[in-house]
Amino acid sequence: MNRKNPLQYVRPNILALEPYSTARDEFTGGDISVWVDANENPFNNGVNRYPDPHHRKLKEVVASLKGFPASQIFLGGAGSDEAIDLTFRIFCTPGKDNAIAISPSYGVYRVSAAINDIELREVRLNDDFSLPVDRLLEAADSRSKLMWICSPNNPTANAFARADLLRLCDEFDGMVVVDEAYVDFSEEGSLRDCIAAHPNLIILQTFSKAWGMAGLRFGMAFAAAEIIAIYNNVKYPYNINGPTQAALIERITATAPEVGRMVDEITADRRMLSDGLSRCACVEQVYPSDANFLLVKVTDAGAIYDYLIANGVIVRNRSSQPGCADCLRITVGTHDENLRILDLMRAYVCN
Ligand SMILES: *Cc1c(COP(=O)(O)O)cnc(C)c1O
Image (cartoon, rainbow, N blue to C red; front, side):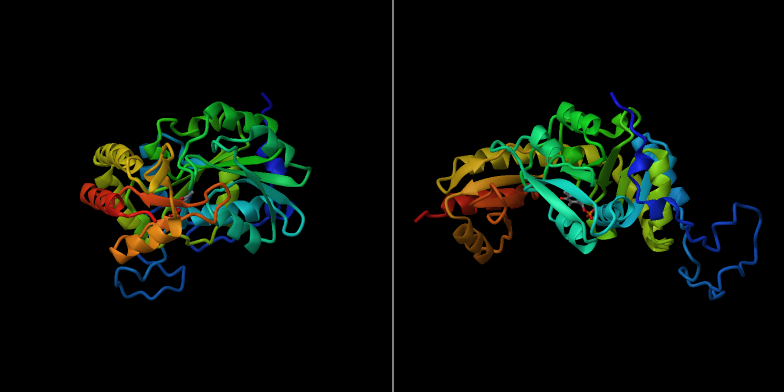
C-alpha cells in the first residue's frame, strides 16, 4: 500500500491561500458582553448576529454521531453539492486538470466540472453495473486529479465492492471521492474508516436521504485533517446560517434514535416493492438495490411515466442515461404510496 500525501494533489494557488479571517475567528472565548467587532445591528431579533463560521457545536454533534474527529469533518450548507463544487475548486486547475467519473452516475459531478471548466472523463460501468476498475485506471493521465465514485450509485442503485474501491485508492495517483449519499441503506457500510490508511480518499455524506433533512441543505465531507483544513479555507466563511445550525442540532438529536427504524422500514418496503414490480407485465427487470430507490426496466418508459403522472405519481425517467434505456427510477415511499404504485403498475396495459 502506498500512503500518498494528499496535499500534492491540491492546486498550488489553493495551497498558498491566505484565508479570509472573520471578526469571530480571532475570538476564542472569554466573558464578552459587548459585541462591537462585526458591524452588526445591536438590536436582538434572533438573527442580528453572524453565526459561528466554524459551526463548532454542530460539528461536535456530527463528530460524536459519526465517531469521527471534528478535524476530519467538513460541513456544507448547500448539501453535498457544496462539497462537490469545492472538491473541483480545490484540486483541479480550470482548463488544465481533469477528473474521472463513472457513467451513469449523479448528474451534479458533470455540471460542477463544466462550471469549473474541468474535463470530466466518464467511464461506462460494466454491463452488470459493476465497477470497471481497470478502465477507470486506464482513463487517468498525469493531469487527472479526482476520481468520482458514487456508492451506492445513483441511478443504478448498487453499492460497489469495498476491495474495488480500495484498489482505486491504492492505484490512482490522485484523490478518490466516494459519494455515500445512500450508504445508510446499504450493507456494504461506509469507507470512512479507511481514510487513515488511504489519505487520498474523500467521503461525502448527506443528511438529505435517510435522515430526512433535504430541506435543511446539509452535507459533509470526511477526509484527512490536512485536506479538511483546506475545505475550511476555501468555503464561504458563513456557509451555514444560524437558524439552520440550530435546526440541524435539534433535528439530528431528535432523529438519531429513529433513523434505524426508518431505514429498516424503507428497506423492508423496498423488497416488497421490488418483488411486486418484478411480477408486473410491463416490468422487464428490477435491478438489485442498496439504496432507497429502485431502478426498473419497463416495456416503455415514456408511456408509463406519462401514465403514472396522469394518476398523480411522479417517478424519474432515466432512459436517457447510458445503459438505462427504458428505465424508471422509483423512490421507496410510505407503505401506502408503495402499494398505490404497485396497483397502478399492475393495472397498466402494455401495447
Ligand atoms: C441525493 C444525492 C446527494 C445529496 O445531495 P444533497 O445536496 O446533500 O441534498 C448526493 N449525492 C448523490 C449521488 C445523491 O443522489
